[in-house]
Amino acid sequence: MRKSPRCISPHYWPGVNDTVAKSTKKIEGEESVHYIPPRRRRPRPKPKMQPPLTPMIDVTFQLLIFFLLAFQLRQPEGPIPASLPQTGTGTKVDTRLAKPIHIVIRPVGDDDALYEIGGYPTPTADPDEVYSVLQSRKDSMGPKVPVIIKPTEDVKWRFVIEAFNAAVRARLENVAFAPSSS
Image: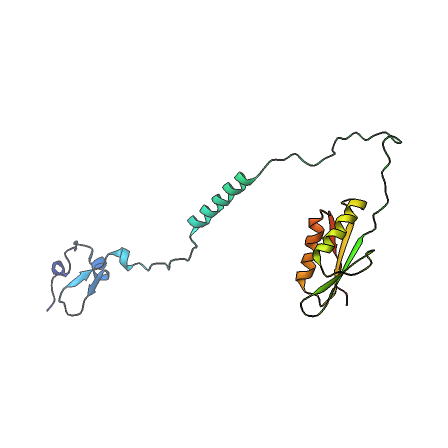
């Protein structure tokens, strides 16, 4: 037996039978037909994947503020005003280069080394003697005399550091290391 249209749905309006017929759904186990609004019947578009823009905008503004605060205005590079002395005036400068002091370090046994100082007659194993020789050379040649420390390949670094410390203690300003030799 067929039910009247008024019993199909509480939202039934006379004269709109087609709409009611399309917007009804029969649920299994129930006798009445339920109304489905048109909004639910429309197919929904799939949501599009979009990256979150708010964090990117935040980072962009933080970088902008950082660079604005870190930027320092400086004068552009250009010529430096200077007045040079006239030619022929002034004092003569001694252009002779001081002869460098060579210190060659050779190992002796497992736990000792000999320091051969250029211009010094005998090698020494005592770092304090190296200091006294360097001090006397500094007094005669000046603090800018070059010192070149040249260890052999098998010498321990401790002896190289002792020679360097002796030169620093003598207040020599120009100390350098030469490549190891055998």
